[in-house]
Length: 317
Image (cartoon, rainbow, N blue to C red):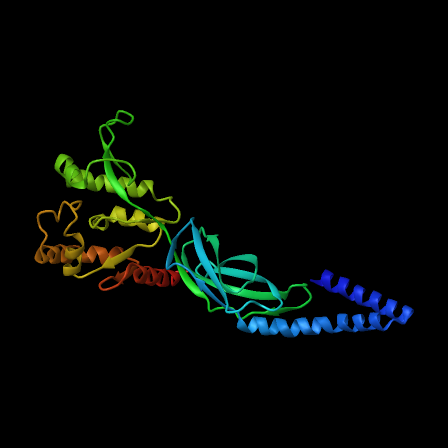
């Protein structure tokens, strides 16, 4: 913009010089128009900016390491008089890690609604604030500029990649006859089959082995089964890797969540409120002793639970 203004000023000086040298009334009038034109452009630009409104739309949550789409809407009810270009600066701020990402976009304005998308990828989990740092409109000649009101910031939660576990036989790998826990995208028998084949003690030993194996994973959530915290060695392994979060619920809520699930051998033939209550009470002391954070989940959505977890984890920083 400074170059355009300097060039325009040079044109005015040249026109004024020619008008003075030639004494031409026409050149004098043209020079006067050139002087007044920026003032007219500025006035019309202010009128255009007053008619423009903006809004941001972000998803409630985005997975870590994946592009998070941010949609910007710019509305102009009529065709602008002189405003041609809008320059936007979008800011992403992860408050948990004080991570900041900024992007700048330029677009030409027209009447109606303009919609475009900005994608930001974050490698850090937590609640992020998406805001418009600035929105600057310029006239068609690039001589005048003014600020357009930015919309209110929006929030998005960057969630870790879930780490699901499954027991699979290793007879076909390395010739070993034991079992090992692997990620969900490998095929294997259901938990109930392993209980039937090898018993609960074998299953619990494999849980411990996997906890040791995944201890160095970053930006992961390890979703443990109910029996994991009953072993002190498991609790020690979990605490080496991060914070232990206990998600609690009433027996009725738990039963409603697992009634169609057949991957919980201890509940398979005992899906009653009485049994769940008894099992919860039996395990409660171990759960509470292992937990760094306790979150009640009854009547809450997944996003509400995530926000509460993030708020509690921040207290440990």
